[in-house]
Image (tube, rainbow over all chains, first blue to last red; front, side):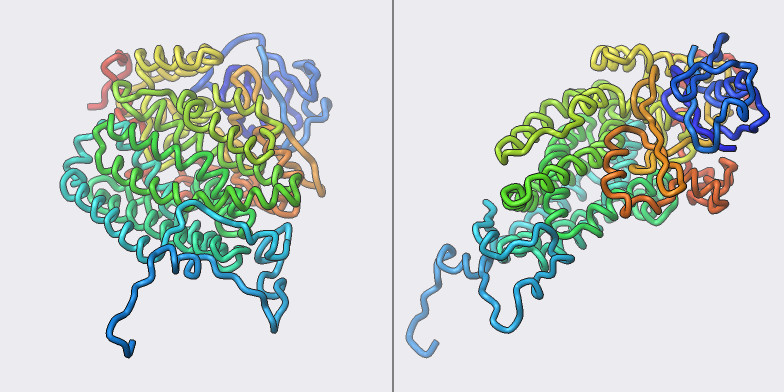
Length: 75
Length: 502
């Protein structure tokens, strides 16, 4: 499932290919890894979707994130 | 004729008959000669356009004499200072600014020939049609000169081949360029063309840009480019005059439509202009050759005169003016540093700004520079630890995302908060880099909704998802031509800790 990810501190949005069974924490790690050439990895990432901070243990299916939607990863 | 002598009319006695001669139609209706679909809206009887005038009032003979002299001057500089060895002596970053301009300029100018010719036939006053005819000839010249000058450089550096190749490729910058220029130059009716191209793009941006670029080229020691853009600018200064009187008539009869065209095309022009000129001024010009930052240049040469030109015609600043002023602080920096980390996707090389250049940028752009500088610090650290010769150790591999309006990468906003926003329409999802891009899209859904950005092409299986396959198969690049760090990461100010290949 392709989703648009925006990492705090980065300068560009990236397309992340995610699985609905992934956790929110795994999604954050995947975006951080994809952006690592520009942004040094940091601990304590939080995922924001539709203005709400998500539970890192939730799955993407549970939080309702669907293809071609935006999510943000903040510190 | 049969008499003993003849009298030559003075210029002012015949010129108005040659360049401004309109008449009433007897056998057809005016709207059949100038159909609304071809001539544009608002459709007004000729009486509404009869006052149309521009200050140059050039005759064809004068045009030919002037243009011949200009071409001779360009050729003289080319022979004296534009040889291959002259270009080889220029600073490496500046040569890459040349490649960037060389690719984006000439075939866009060629598309402008078509736009001008539409005005030359369907413009609503004969003086407008005369000026547009000269405009078409101008744009042909602006195509031929850079193609001719850059062709000689291909033997030295294959990236210069993109001067001609760029718009024929599916490179992401070319997709964005075509999306803009196809609409602006090929699809616009003469009214939209005159306001969008002649008034907004040329009067607002490029006419003054060429003045600034010419000065910058002079400082960088590139006298050929200096002469070329200086010569092109003199043509632009003339045919850009078409825009003002067209805008005044449209504003008098349909001010809302006039404001829409101004605001739409200012934003669309700004985005591509920021990338091409912003990169060149703030990153690819040697520090010692810089006079103004891109922002200072925009403030001094573009903004004041554009706002004044609007006010003189009773028009307002765009509703997004505050957003634009903020973007002026940060947008081209966001794109440059992002594109640096995807440099293999383009046809020119990049440089990492040195510590001195970063101090210069910090002083010129204090509002957001700290956040941008952190990204350069990270890139520098990656180079420090990368094995020498391993370019892809400091390169992105994830798929980047693109705006469904401007087709440029999603680099709006700031590092703290990207301004991308999404929209669902007709069962499809769209994403935009900024509110103005979304606003333009929503106002003309029929025009834009079916276009597929690069991500959608990948998802549809039209373009490969693998980066190297995309570069080779879809963008038409190969290892010799794709962009690299101009110095392979070997900067005098950067100590490398990685292994050196033996």
